[in-house]
Length: 80
Image 1: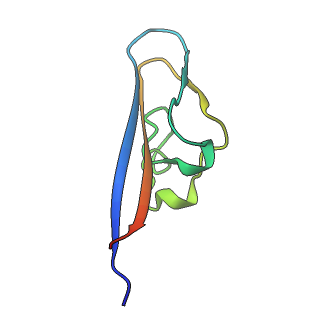
Image 2 (image 1 turned 180 degrees about the vertical axis):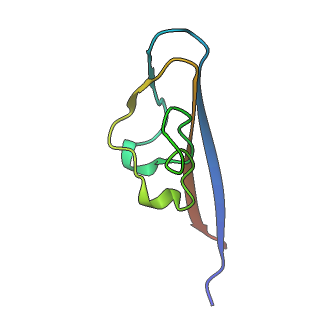
């Protein structure tokens, strides 16, 4: 049996401005990240109940006015 440890890194983009703002994820590759929430999308698409189905394709992201965009990066490591 192989034991694994899963850690989760969260990157949250918050745009409180009245216009779109561009953000850049500073860590890892784009495909390591997934969309968790996008408050600019209509329901039921705003919350991803299966984030792994929504991979991020670019480390650059445009955040809509007054939107919040959490992104997740789960990592699995073998335990010694």
